[in-house]
Image (cartoon, rainbow, N blue to C red):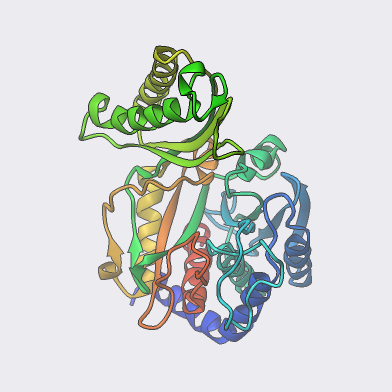
Length: 402
């Protein structure tokens, strides 16, 4: 057994022993979910635990973000290096549908439906075991980020000087994947997750009585045509070997069954993997909705907002992360190499635009739990992943700064 494998085995043993305590932390976070930029209780607990373990604590980055600074006691080749480990803390504005779950959300309309309670717990577990010995050379920055769910908490932390105050040679992140078996890891070479943009458009026509539609400009009919055009946009204007998705999430209009409304509002998202396709879709989108509306005598007010860039892993750091994950999970067979990109978005992308790094997806689907998709009201994080993910995060420190 190599020295690296031995070190990872020791980490895993320590984290297996810590598993019941980590499970209690995770379930407490799950029971008290907080949405983006409101993670006050969560960040208080994170900061208190880090301080208890003798870790230097910095608060207030990106609003409710927390950074723990842990310096190794060893000197050596890695002594002047630093890496960042990131976990997201926020929940979603959803009502949980797990009535029999003892640790179900105690806050109406709030739910940890994406596993950020587990991500936070795994980084805390890694911090705990690393702080016990500090048996590494260099510095690890423990980044507990707010507001990943559509509110760009990563960018907010960067705007507050994250990497100027806490320079990192590389940064690593982790996410659970309910579609992948526990003990398996997706390794994306290059693009891991899509860029995501949001749109809101208001179709403006002329209201009329439902019995006399010819006296108005029917915004409902125009909106229906716009929806059809947008769905055809990708199929007929984007190379079928490229990835682009236009999804309509909301349509609102009207207050009466017998009145054609003056306006109809439509909202949704666009996902792409390449910058040039992202630019192309935005241009096509603008032309399509304006011309379709104009052909029917209507007008469109369009807001098109670029949210998150694509999450692009850097080659060397991806290989380093894969090597550590394999060591934690017992070998190369645990890895799904060259996994295709996912079309979800992630604001970890902003970190990767600034420093090299990698974002891995750890499977959490077990025979009895962990298989409900994220952003589903019946979701719950699989606590069996906690020691695995924590061992990976701590293992990255020992591997990179050992």
